[in-house]
Amino acid sequence: MPVIQEKNSLAESVIERPLRMEPAEVVRALVDVFGANLVAVMGHVKNTRTVRHWLEGKKAPETIDRLRFALQVVLFLQAAGEKKSTVDAWFRGMNLRLGDDAPALVIADAYDIAKAQRDVMSAARAFITQ
Image (cartoon, rainbow, N blue to C red; front, side, top):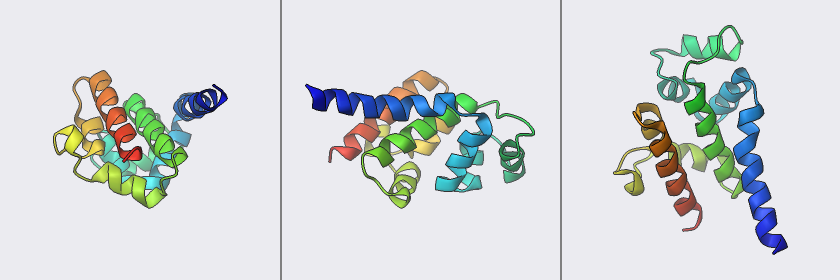
């Protein structure tokens, strides 16, 4: 039973950590993994200048919930032992479990964000158990 509790504790910490972070911290962590261009895509903005404004704390992204979720998945994959470069490739690459769409685009384009969250997290779980 302690092993299950440890795994649950780890999952809870990577899921809860982004919820406690300031928007600029969330953006900074995502830019560190993906660069500003992909963060702009997931954040529904046309250029990286807006991402810089987010980093500087000049304004918070309107899409902070999507960005927080993206960071939750990043931390989940990293906690499972995946390298930053692997996480980046996974987010950008075609994913069979997501109808051949890239996880980053599923997050960015989702009309129903709750469904996108379930689908992307399910794909991330499947990835780490392969």
